[in-house]
Length: 300
Image 1 (cartoon, rainbow, N blue to C red):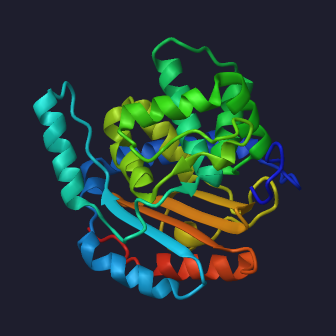
Image 2: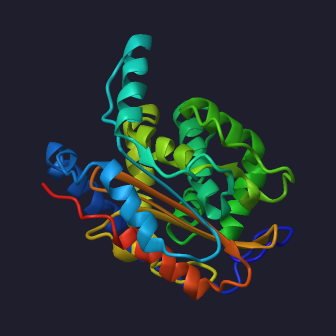
Image 3: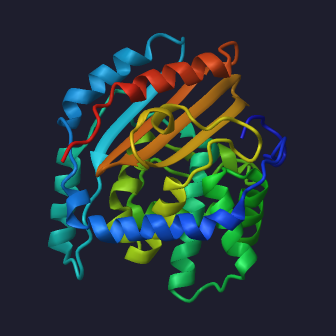
């Protein structure tokens, strides 16, 4: 997503190579099953020790960087209210961020995560029935950040209410629909909210739905549907097959926005950035990639 238009639209299509998708999904799903608890053991230095290094590596772009790090929560069946409270306390304890983590940012393509989760939830609860083409729309919206796919999902399934429903399910206090309901990329969120969403995904969503969304994120295409190179930030630096979502947009309020989120091992990484329009994408990408590169790799 690169320009503010009545509907964010792809400038240049890249062949989705859909024939490979079933194989990719099967490989990643089997890897998830085989790794099991071993994946959950992946860890790194405490988040509070890492955030300052990431902020320092970002440098001075004349803009704002918001960083939030936490860890994914393991699913537990039948949690009581007390257990839910304890879960939130543990999540808060494991979360570290910088002073901009509660600052509102336009989501750009980060909102596609909320849209996909909500559709999967509504299918699971019998509120929606999808055709094969609908599944391809969701997949393309996440893997190749396809804007026309997101616009169709937004229009057909009630985008603003989808954002409200996800915010309510996950307790996202700083996430709201856009002031202009035709501009899904201007949905508002915070780094802390995105970190909470990804951390709670395995326990709030049905396990199969969480896995589906994470598989789509892990098989993100190097080049987006609009021709933008997605290999920056977490996608450009994290080893293995991190679950990533990238976002870019210009120019809300005269600013350029470049975002990168991911799940690396069990660690959730959120980087949201806003720079003046005078700062080009190349410089903004390099700064965000430098910040992500300061994150130590997970270790077993």
